[in-house]
Length: 230
Image (tube, rainbow, N blue to C red):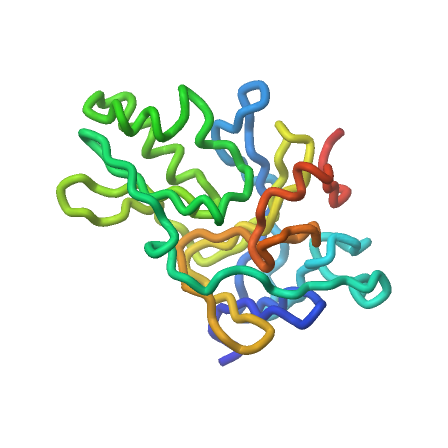
């Protein structure tokens, strides 16, 4: 139904967002190069539906202006339909476990501080190390990393409202992916639904090899949607 939040992928075209999904822009704040947290920069007026650019060429970022048809954008979806659990590798620590689905990485780099999330999980019997590892996993926008409660075996997820954030990666000097939050269904151009997750990142530079999901290509190509400070 059109009043239910969902994202419909248009063939070789934009993302059609339905259900009055809130849209904002967020910047990854950094300590030198590495991100330390997220800062909301702008909130867009809420619309019942809207089109978000997927080809990286729009002059009306983050919205679609039809540039995909002029540029010959190939938006063929190549991502796996496997569940997160089936793709993830489990890393066990004394106070925290970590599931890591490397194929979902969007290059956000929250996992690199303090020796890396995996190293911190190994030391998670220390309260400080456990806390930093948990924060890093929860800040991972793609949901590649999911912290697992040691006692219950349940995933530890941040509480996220159904919304979309247009991200900017100041440390990498690149405009980042669309950060989809709160379990919004993403429907392929063929009408099939990807696994609904609390956190996913969708490519908007047009160069991902894991479409519709981000694979970090925006960093290598220095994608700039016009909003990034240089």
